[in-house]
Amino acid sequence: MRKLQDLSLTARPIVATVTGLRLAVFLVVISPIAALAASPQASSPRETIVLNGSDMTLAEVVKIAENRADIRLAPEGVERIKAARQVVQQFVDKQIPAYGVNTMYGQDVDVVLSQDQIERWNRVNVFQEATVMGDESRPLLAPGVVRATMALLVNSYAKGSSGVSLPLAETLVARVNENRIPNNIEGGGSVGDADLTMNNQLTVGLYDTPGFALGAGEATALMTHSFISIARAAVVVQRFETLLAKSKVALALDMEGFRANPSPLSPMAMANATTANKRVVQQEMQFLLSGSKLWGKAGEKGAPRNLQDFLSMRVAPDVLAAVKTSLDRLNATLVAFCNAVPVSPMVDVKTGTLLSVTEWDPTQLTLDIDQLRQAMAILAIAVESRGLKTMSRPLTDLPSGFANTDPTKYDGLYTRNISYWLTSLLREAMQNTTPVIGLTASFMAEGHEDISAAFPNSVAMAEVALERLEKMVTLEALIGSFAIERRLQSGELTQNDIPLPLRTVQKAIMLLSPLHAGVENQYSLAPLLKYFIGEYQPPKELLGSATSPQ
Image (tube, rainbow, N blue to C red):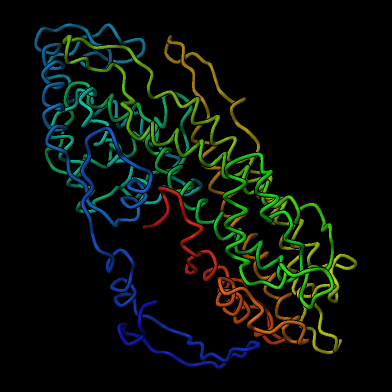
């Protein structure tokens, strides 16, 4: 946490009390300049990621998207770009027709362009295919996604098969490092090759530099790729990996608050686990609940209330493990595509030829992110089920909704409609988890057959589903923390009974809970969501992904 004296701000203290904790909470007003100076991007150590076309990771994609790293071409990548460009230039010099290199597209494919005509044709074609709605009805791509897309393009060029010129690659490198990123690219609009419409809008943004021009094959290389959707998917994977860790924390809080039976996490259960990921989840949950009285024997103070809890509590390790398996699969596929050359034709430097290839086809990516969204659906259902049952009679031994025993207090969770929000968020998440692979389209475009998987649509839906799921997990953490608080207030538990990995987060959540809103005041979840989704860092023991922040 940054120290208050390091920022230009004004602060007003409010004293809030939670069982076992009395803290001064500051309402802080930060000037725009101070906020910018205090941003993680401004204060974090900066690194330079070397792009060679072979080993870019999702963690690096996310760092670039978050403007926490610069990029540069590996020396061997520079040489490969030069060699491939020489092959392309031979086709231009000898007027040998090569689709998308020195010819037009579609029905005009037989028109071979001279060197003088290529630059104008590229510009005309890019602007013609960059059509926008322009009425603010489409969401704009986040600048970070565009920044990561440019880096992915440079990485693919470093492989030495795209045939673009070194000046184009260097232009993209400079723009990334100077953060000169187009900020008006509309999401969607692609049915043909990859992210076609968005790609062309990005390319239009490059023309704001006086004298900028695209040579033979370069417009094609900037059009036919899926790197915008791949960059968006990389961010989704990173956020979801972090959310999975926080979901385990929320589950542990729920188990503590409900006094659930930890048998599904026991060494015996681990020995009989059907998958490696399930054993990992069980081990992580054991860490979160270390020192808990839930591990006590039946009849002991603080021990589990039941032998068999409701199913969404008992099968939680299975659900989390299955979700992690889907995430691992998408992770591996994305890494492969981050280091691919999604352009056709592709340059074969050894033979001096151009090849028709289809590395830009996103069918496998679509299948894998469809599966991840279905996994999100299962997790969302489990989170809602646990949340509702943990706070409901007859399953809980606490008053329904954790209402105060004094009916005039009005300080439970039901009266704040937390259960309603859980169900509403579930419905909104589920609307964005239906597979889209069945929307793969085969159609005719200017006399040529085209086919396109709905990868951009699946990524966009994943973003929405994930945003809803983040809120649901936050509400589960609130419910579990609230239940723990009631047991602390009754004397059933003491602060020392709460597992150490959960103490700080439970206290922080309660400071932002309805207990401190005042019964006659409207309660806003915004501070809690900001804390749990954005600021709270789960224990490092739960973060094992290559995309997790380092």
